[in-house]
Image (cartoon, rainbow over all chains, first blue to last red; front, side, top):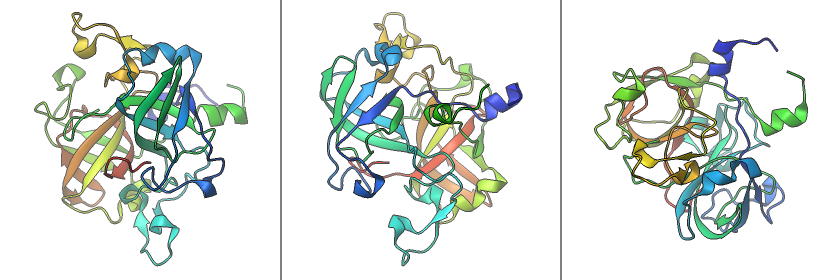
Length: 144
Length: 144
């Protein structure tokens, strides 16, 4: 790969800050949304990133951003919920994991904190899913 | 850089699917949150990704995910709102743009659609900010 500052800016590399440890082992096991019967899971934060957790508390509402490592990145339109009777829809109008950047947004509650591990849920991400960011929930209209 | 499948999985590369065109030209001009007086802006979707917009409509509530290209990625704790009187807090408990993966989450309304350009807001992201994903808003408890 050629070194190229422009390219680095346009196609930034994500760092894995943690990983999901879940009883859900395969994409076929996972509910489509956390609200559809998903379990709680552990979010295991990498040692180098653990000091970024300072200030989080049990009971906090957070958004966990995952990377759907088994998704297909070349997909731009899908039949929502994989139901062929639903009309083809742009991935930006759906929550399909298949999309150019398969980022998952998971609003969850922090149920326990054990060192650099957070017990969170409900969350439909499968075991081994990389976590790339954690943010406190803000109300509608508040950005970033 | 060595080719390494494991590394590709652990540190995935983001693709720029669009860019923000805003009257806000510098980070120092931007309000800290969209709700704090931010303007509307254009989200200009790349031609290759435009078919991913199919099904979006004026009035839709969406989450735009940006990449804060001017952020500092080596920061794990900050004084919230850059106020030294606020105690040092882990970046995962704040919305600081400085964090290991400087992803911005912007809940906005679609005010107009002009081909592959969406008029959205309010949004505090500055002009030239890369967009990496667009998702419809789901209610609390609904994931990805």
